[in-house]
Length: 312
Image (cartoon, rainbow, N blue to C red; front, side, top):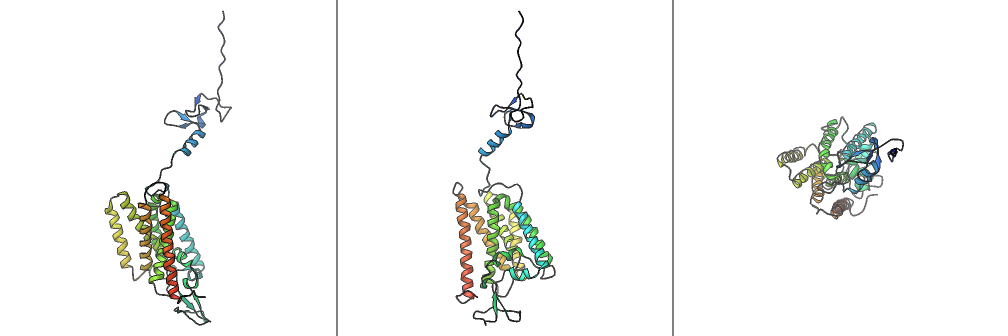
């Protein structure tokens, strides 16, 4: 008798039918070729099963509930925006006068600036936050001194951007991008509101230092929250506070102080909100509360400057 002949069955990759394969996906049991193989804890998995597994795995979160970011993308974008704003104001200096932080001043019929007083003559007009230019509270934080003006000139933006990079690349990965953006903008607003409260009218102020001081406060609060070695952190905070005091005659200490306190308050809410499904809600409510408080304080101050009514 002749032995029975057996025909070998050819198996091919389910994604590439023309490629012979003898390896199965350990999850779906389909044949896969070398191009479709992905290392797994046991054997290999196909591309689709790896994607499905990634969707079903809970993403890691930071101590404040933010998504882990490997690169400080927002920090880089903020630096880019500051640099672009700086180039724009160098090309068109009138941008500085229109968007710098300014509580109030009068522009006379001769085009000269005068100290603001309520009940000004009809041929004068007001500029600043009292005139409804509320955007100055934010835009002033993205402008800097021109290269040949002030005590620092070009160093103004250079020092702020270097500080922003050094702090942002540490704070942003811990907070996550959304929380970091909220912190930065609120610290900027906090610095501007303190300037509105404590700076004389007719004085313009610009710079990202309010936000930078807010990030400095965030760095300190987060370091304490995670139990980091506080020796170097305390040295940094000592330097930051000394700079706040020593530079009072050269820079806007009001904006620095406002950014520092606002940043500390926001980050404290981030860091110590109870972990769980409501953590993000509590943090969002805290940020909204800080925003409302700053808005109310600013509105009350403007009402005081205008004698109870908004300038026309």
